[in-house]
Length: 164
Image (tube, rainbow, N blue to C red; front, side, top):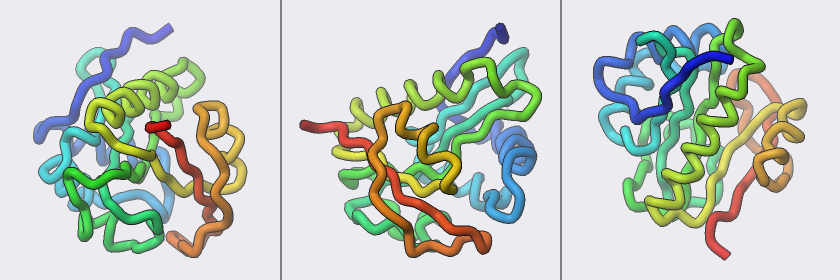
C-alpha cells in the first residue's frame, strides 16, 4: 500500500498536476494553462494525492448553476460560478504506476466531502462508456449520452445527487 496525503491544490502544484494529467489522458487532457487557471480560480474544487512529495493523482472541477455541461468553454473556467449549485468534474487521474492502490477512491471520497461542505446539490461529469460502471460504484447515476465530442470521443453523462 502506498502512503499518500490528499489535500487541496496550491500554485506550486501546477507542473506536477500537468505531468499527472498528461500521463493519464491523451488528446482529451488539460493543458498546463488550463490547470493553472483551475488552481487559481477554484482551488477548493481541486484535490491532489501526493506520496513522498510527488503528485501521483488529482481530481479537479468547476462549479456552475447549469445542468448541461457540454460547453467546452467551462474547461477554461468560462461560466464557472464559485457558489453555483453543481460541481463539474473535469478529470480524475492517478499515475499508471500507482493505479490499483485505492488512490482514486480516496480522491473521490474527499471530493464528495468537499462538495457537500460547499453545499452543492450535485456532482456532474462526462466519461467514456467503459467508465460508467466505475462511477456507478461511487453512487453516480447514468444520465444519458452527452452532446460533447471532446477529443473526438463519445461521452456519457453521470451525476451524483448530494441533497435529498
